[in-house]
Length: 121
Image (cartoon, rainbow, N blue to C red):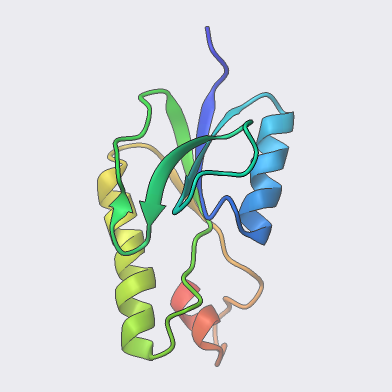
């Protein structure tokens, strides 16, 4: 039996990269869901963007998806909601019944005035 697999959006970012490394150290197969192929050969890759969703189906043995991705290039509230909230909806639709864990920073709390925190919340 092969090692269990976990897919991580934004696996090239700070939080996603830390999770990628930790899951790999724990013996998981990591599927990096990101625009470009990972620099390390330890991660498998499925091309992914928030605007388009995964470019291919996830491997059948993915046990969970950890969603860390957030497009920081978007500036207006409408663009941020279209890309980041819409992208999360596309991801949820694409992965079927695979559990999804939504990751955010401490910026996402009730009452925050930060657009990043409000969007993540």
